[in-house]
Image (cartoon, helix red, strand yellow):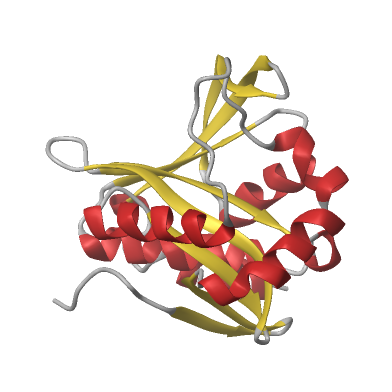
Length: 203
């Protein structure tokens, strides 16, 4: 098998070409612009860390190096999300655990300008299929009950609702409840992308 990282994944959709690929240092300007333009859209959903003693990358280059190190160590798969060659978001397969568990979780953000066009469902499906190809067995996505756009993503993909985990993640200064959605390899023998395409194209 080829090295699991770096890797680029692509799917052509009616919205355009959706590509998952490693972030690069030269993405700094576009990434920063996206984050600034979408601050109000994103900040209410993003994890924070309680207390002041936490590491924060001082530059975008340092941030990319940290992501690359995690990917090479096999603990995450950190992707930039492109639509027709333009950076529009980020998706990370994180908390990768092997051994008897073989599981991981997925988090993502996307520009409000492309939300609802199937970009993130397609990206999530590609990432999950790749994680299963590498040998993982179960992937979960944890979403705040109030985050309707993200709930729509897992609804589109047909992920299984495993219920509410109380005070699961620290967001905006408080421990917030999340709903957990998951899928295992046995549930999508044909692949999640193929199932998403079938659901998306159904009359």
